[in-house]
Image (cartoon, rainbow, N blue to C red; front, side, top):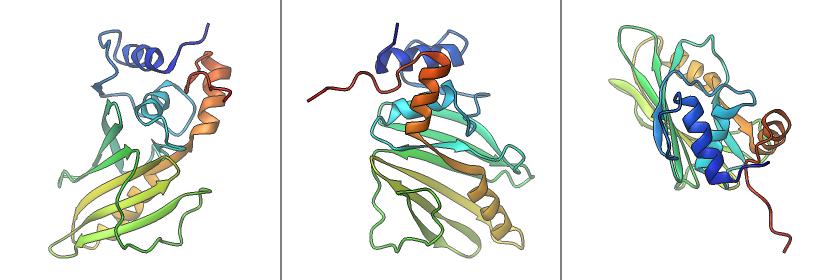
Length: 190
C-alpha cells in the first residue's frame, strides 16, 4: 500500500528521529542527507513538492560537515560547519523560489535546467555571500561567511563541491522501487 505525501513525510520524520516526531516539521541531527536515494532526501523533497532538485551532501570527505536538518512546509534547511577552530558555518536552504535580482548566471551549472548565481556581500575583512541554484519549482540558497585569509577561496570551493543537487525524478523512482513510497502522491489524469 502506498502512502500519500503528508503521511510519508510524517512517517519518514518519525523513522529518522527514532519514532519521537509525529509532525512534518522538525529538526534532525545525525541524519546526513547524502546524495543517494533514501528517506532523508525524501524529507527534503516533501518540504518543497514543486522542486525538481533536492540539495544533498555530495562529498562526505569534505572539511565541511553536516550539522543539522530543519524541515517545515515550504522550506528545508541544512546547516554545515567547517572543521577548524574558527567555527565557520554555512546554511543551505531549499525553497520554492528565490530572488536573484539582476545577477548574471554563472557558466558553471552542470545539472540540466539549473542556473547558478553568486552574490558576494563582503570581501574584507571576511568573504561572505550567497550562492543560488535556481531550477523549475525551487531554489537552493547557500549562505556563507568565511574569514578572509589565504584559505577562504579554498573553503568556498570545498563548500561548492560538498553541496550537491539530486534530481527529484530519480529520487521518486528509487523511493518507489526501494521503499514502496510514493513521493509525490497520485497524479490527476486531467
